[in-house]
Image (cartoon, rainbow, N blue to C red; front, side, top):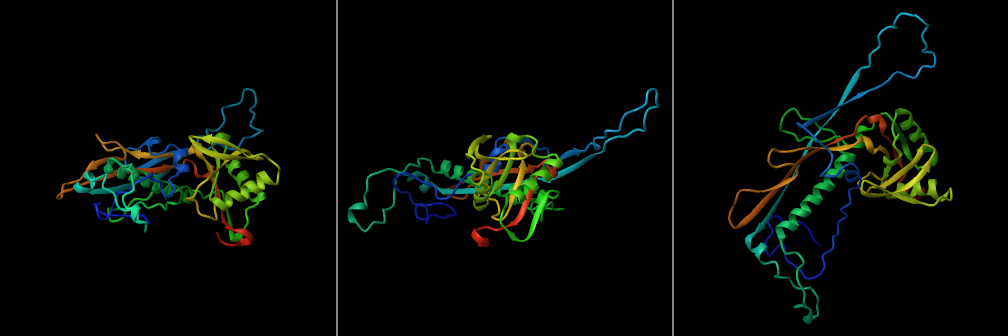
Length: 331
């Protein structure tokens, strides 16, 4: 099976004939829905901050008497939250020969002696460009995983790496935790949605999302579509195709995400989320540049710094400790 080579040469990275198919899924729905690697906001440093504030509860007995003195002053206090930007860096290396011999192809591996010289061409005509594109796709997948399950790390020196806080770790207020695995139910989801809605989340129906992996997606479909004889519908969320379910708290999108833990459903107010990018002067964000020459090899690095802004964490919610298969079995 295909794998990884260090410096690619004509021996460890041969060419083949025929159409090229990807073995690894490349979808990054959460990252794509909130701006992707080309959208989002720009940072001014390795730490990105944003402010939050609240209002007092609405009071039906706030009326004032005619001619009364001004009431005591009340001022709202602002708070702050933050996240760090993490570095993504990849290196590509190709020998001169590997770049030049793009139409030198390996055998088919077939026992038929007439298949050794099968007619065809290698569809990749520029190996460096192709390798660069795959590195960018891998960075997007890494970022998707970080934005979901990243564990916050803000080091005091350069002996440790910066790690952005993912949406799961950021969600602390509206949490349903099952001490022992339980199947996902309609009541469980509605209780969480009510808590998030009460906190001020999922106010924008178009960007209110339930994000989960495959098994929990099946349970949501069963609870909110199949059992209610609803017709499943779809919508486009910032270029990401999602299905919809109707709830007491509006029509929510269900985002199937292979990077989500199997036993978790996350409620996301996607309008509160954005990738934050740090641009290097004269280079931008996520750029490729050649590295120092070491013989007859070209090496290039791809570099970028990115973090997640998730807004007020109480605009999101999560259910953990769900069963991940039939009758409580594993996935």
